[in-house]
Length: 571
Image (cartoon, rainbow, N blue to C red; front, side, top):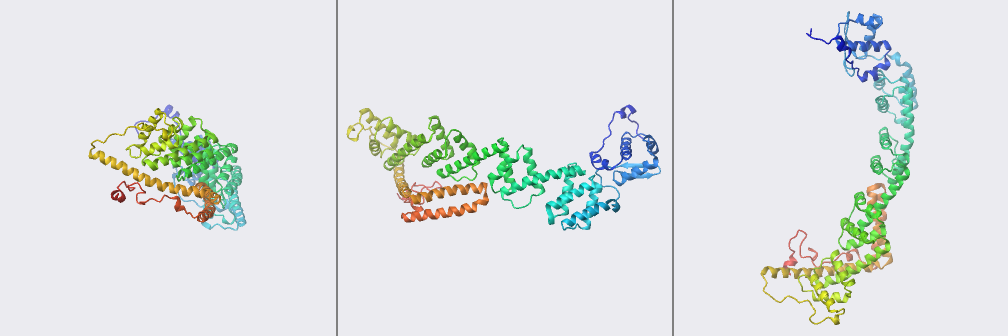
């Protein structure tokens, strides 16, 4: 015996812990005396007072014989183990314990239940095997679900599954209801009625997504998740209609996006989805013009297209600017920087953008002429700005600019030398070739001793100009072939159909894979029409590709790995 103990005052202030599983599983099927006896015995276990069974029965005003029968009942429930009957002494077990002797199910207790269950199974033309029937009875023994409530679950599954009814579906559904603390007929009826309402909603979603199967129980988890996010049914239908083809996880991802943007009702959801589609179309068209392949348009739409659209740039303006950007070797970041500059300058509407692109195209054509004479002149926005200054601010004609280019052809840095020449001519008031003074040309450096390194650098510059001229000639030939083809209306229409089809196919591969096959077939037809138009014109796609003299280095003098090409050494 321990040398110390709690005082009565101390134990009076302590607590007796009752496991929740006792309350949910066992308390509903026990009468008041059984619960009182169990709880008082549990209390005595914790305070360790000298208190026998007779005294406890007398205190609770329960006859001792009845008191002993109560603990026989709790032993059948595996909550206690009777160690002695005279005197009565019991050991309390954890509620979730598996200890205890196996108990047989009393058939008379479930006679009426079995008759009703067999009637329901006959409706479905189904029979459960004996061990499955036994498991159902064991479930009812273990769980506090009412028999009529369980029969309601079976009836629901029969209506839902018909001939495909299975024991596992019935028992899983009943277990899920018990986990949600739904045991009575009324509770189960309300839950299943709610499921029937959602079944109509889910069936419509399946139709919109092209899913040809009956909704399964785990499919309803998606609906619960969406409604928990505050999504209205109309918004969910709008999202499914937008996808047209897909799966519930795909729809779940789109609904998550709608929820993030607070588009939870149908009107806002449709507005958001329409704008999303518009931005995706912009991304695909711009990417096509820039020569960039885009799989998922959303990152580009979030970072670039949405900002461009908010500033008033439409598809037509963006397509024109992207075409200009392609000629300058731009990607999305460079095009975004250009649009930032144009926006600051107020160039937003269609007419101003067209004027700007036409002016830039004119500058590019003049730059190509300069490159054909001078060789290495980089095609950058800064170079175009310098040529534009010569034209507009200095009022020089293209003839004067080309004259400066010809006189700068042998300079190590042609562009700065051209700028010096034009500056001197402007100061002298020479605005035509015939007016150029004999000595107005910027003085060229006199011959002087050069180191081997300087001589090598000059040779390298001369060789780079040589390659630039070869390369520009090949590019110009390809560009001329394309320009001649685009004069033909049949080719122009077929080429537009191909570009449009490639964008639609790329979009379908991301959002509606089921439509991709049909779009691919249409694209193949458009490509064939385009090929036939080219053949009639005596052209092919190969004519649009520059024909370089040295295909290994594309007339650059260097291979892709950075090593010097054989033609560079031979030259």
